[in-house]
Amino acid sequence: MEGETKAVKRPGKSSDPTKQRESTEKKDPPKDKSLSDEIDPQQTSGDPKLRFGPMPRFPHQRVWTRVVLILALLTVVYYTSKSGKEVPLARQHEVLHQRKQSLECSETYKAEVEHYPGCIPDKCGRLISDSLITTAEAQAMLEIAKRGLNLGGSLGGASILDLHSGALSVGRTFINMYMTEKGKNIYRKSDFDTYKQVRMKIHRAVAQQFKVSPDVLYLTHPTFFSRLTNLPPGTEHDEYWHPHVDKDTYESFHYTSLLYLSDYGEDFDGGRFVFIDKDNVNSTVEPRKGRVSVFTSGKENTHYVERVRSGTRFAMTVSFTCDPKHAIQDPNGKVMKRVPK
Ligand SMILES: O=C(O)CCC(=O)C(=O)O
Ligand SMILES: [Fe+2]
Image (cartoon, rainbow, N blue to C red):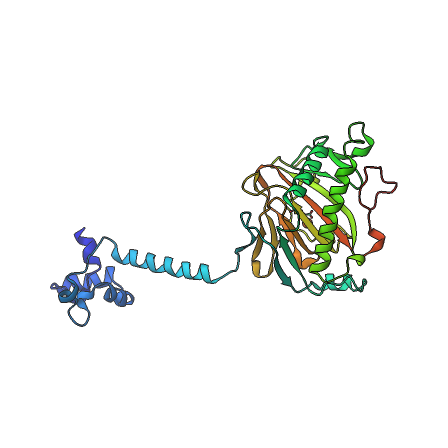
């Protein structure tokens, strides 16, 4: 202990000149003199002893002082820099009327939508709303999704059900649910009516958010329910967590919307939606039942879904195009004559 205490003493004040030299050479390089000065107030101007009494000392005082200074510096740097950080855009417990974020459209997206005058967004960006879809509508959509998905299900962690085409994940592949005995009468007209009502609300919200007429926006393929779990992937269709641009993944998309049917942190963990933004800043959306997220489908909204760690996550992807050639109709439970590409 004594030796440790000596290490922080100023060498100039030692009574033994030999010790003084030794101590200077071995323990206190000249560089450290200022630090030594800082932590030994008895040697500073005035007489702090009289005012404060002797300063307390503790082992490795200089090391600890440095550690504290470095930690303080790192804390300041961390909180003042956003780079590499996550910014929550919507937390699960928040009830948002409308949370908007405007973005510069990517060049490729601009070039793409230019072909559709009237369908060009005034600005690219995102909107999150918890007030568009009622609790009863969200519950009805969840029941529709569960009923269909219970007839099949992927081997891996991602299953889909498309009420328009009838496509349903089964094992490693897809079947047409409407062509199966159990699936052909699984829904009533009232289910399709609720579905259409929800679709229309989202359709109008997309048009309003991006200041385009709803008449130049068309529902497109694929519009589908998804059920995500933490099962290991069976095929590449189960790998839902890869970063992507919707316009590249699904050619016809110009506007993407998502309706969440379960709650992050309650029904499942993991599974947040993440926008990958400039400067390595990610904006996260925590799914909340009934929450709608809409965004332009270009590179400005590159995103991924985190892997679900536990529980089951239900959502619906509702897609819109400006191209009437890619329009699809609301579902009615009949087998489609032509499945769009
Ligand atoms: O379910 C989600 O939150 C997003 C799904 C998605 O990225 C997609 O369907 O392209
Ligand atoms: Fe996507």
